[in-house]
Length: 228
Image (cartoon, rainbow, N blue to C red; front, side, top):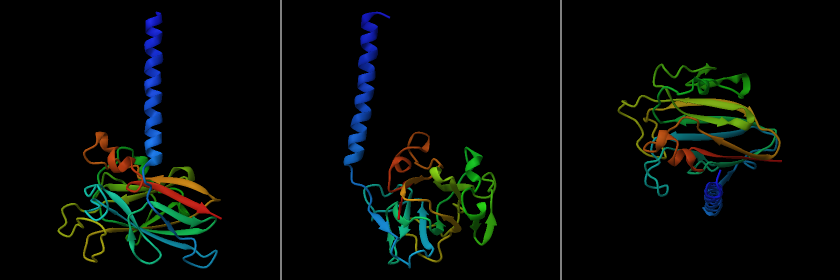
């Protein structure tokens, strides 16, 4: 390769490296969602009840992206909070309830339809135990709650998008809104920060559905802050 060619490669690599550095600095400086603390909501050693919901549109009361799909969590005071950072105690059973208000579709990878890492490797879908969900049937899968480092995957079955009582924006609290209730339990490991995310590309309007809320903490991904 000529000197000019080598120089072009070096400059190209430098530009790529600089781009990644800028991305990292900007990401570090951007405000992060608040953390909801579940470590003192019940006696030490007692199971933690963690309730979240998934919505197809977060609405106008939660920031700059009212049309984005998102998770919300109910804090120990019973209020719905738009954050995906949750602090929980180590070596503790987490009883997770997910109120799924969003529609679904067939999965690109059917592996995400398998329940893994929960107690018994099952989820309770509207009162019925499920270990594998065929997303090519019914209303498909809208999202997953997955913690890859812990081997946890919980598929969230979608609601009927043609129902007359689909919740239009968060928080979805009307008892008449169509929803699927998914329950599952798992035990937290030792202390650490464990990233979790949805593995169903649901960033409508972004390339292959993987941008926007899919790549933004506070919407379709977050952190489980496990403390001793």
